[in-house]
Image 1: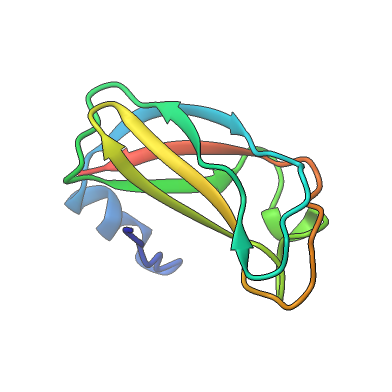
Image 2: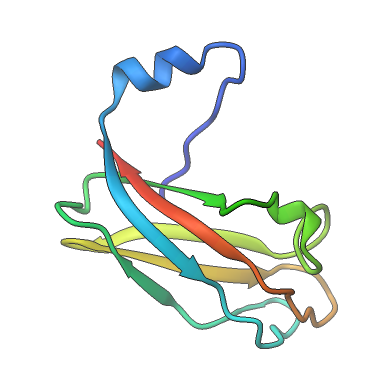
Length: 112
């Protein structure tokens, strides 16, 4: 899986170093996720994405930490470009209790 560190002070550095491809949105599953397991893999099409690229996931109009089930001690959202033009996204629960996530739509983009 790929992760991108974001520097809020030097936002221009990321923009200069990487080109971003248009993506789409994805409404994440709200099905309960058992303790120490992951929910189903969900996919979104991003034209021209390759497995050498890094996905960027962000809340669409809301911070995920404001949605029940996310935030400190809640679900984590994992993502990867798993095939040409395809970003796979999965919610994982590393806690010792089941979590029922609230509704969350995310923006999905990739950078190269």
